[in-house]
Image 1 (cartoon, rainbow over the protein chains, first blue to last red):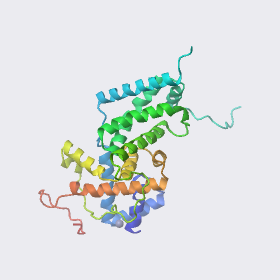
Image 2: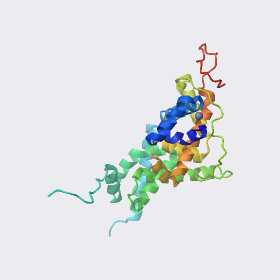
Image 3: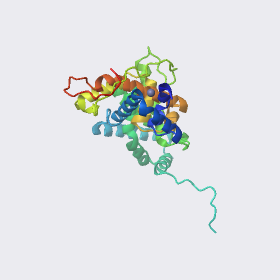
Image 4: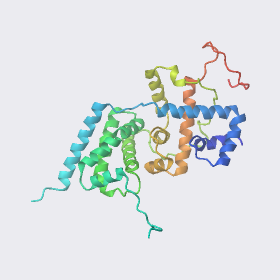
Length: 86
Length: 218
Ligand SMILES: [Zn+2]
């Protein structure tokens, strides 16, 4: 297996979406190819770091402000779409 | 006699029950759906628009659109996937408005000879995120992901940050599964490459001896 072939399967490999045979071919490649090993390992870390990063959390006060704005606009919409029965 | 039961009814998920109640006009059920997903929609919108005000608008507009279009929701996908699709479209519209000079599209053709193939292969420190304090790390991560093209950034965020499956991501972005996979690979590799300079092992200077790796990867 060439490095480029390894890279093509990297996403499936990291996501555990390979059949046993392909996976063991990739494992073999990783066992001797230091470059691919490092790329694989640091890509995995990249994903983990972002997954745990909580970059854009919605602050509680803003959250409730947005929610009440949404719900009051929904109520307006409803009034317009079904007018009260005469 | 209880032998074969054809057409076993799929149990209706709790979420779908909320959706159905909301469709029948129960606003409390809809509010519950808002509570469930507002944080996710906000994160996705922030990542795409890179602007706080825009992200706030997107949250409101996406939920209002969902509310107004609930009757059209076919229940063939998860409500969340459907909502994400609405939110992504709203966010892209905001982005286009702010950057009219650059066309912003999710399916802009991705060049094949690209800069995501690893150029620099250097190992990272064992716990790279501990090399920086929290504020520094946030700053590094934000600026790094903001440098990705919107089409890559969005796939990465849905798939790797928000945890949607490949199929759900494809559905939410109206892309094919192979397109999602190839963008995800490029996004991951580009982020990795861009993080290299912050996270790689420092040679010598830190007082630790470099492990003998055998092949000169400098
Ligand atoms: Zn290799």
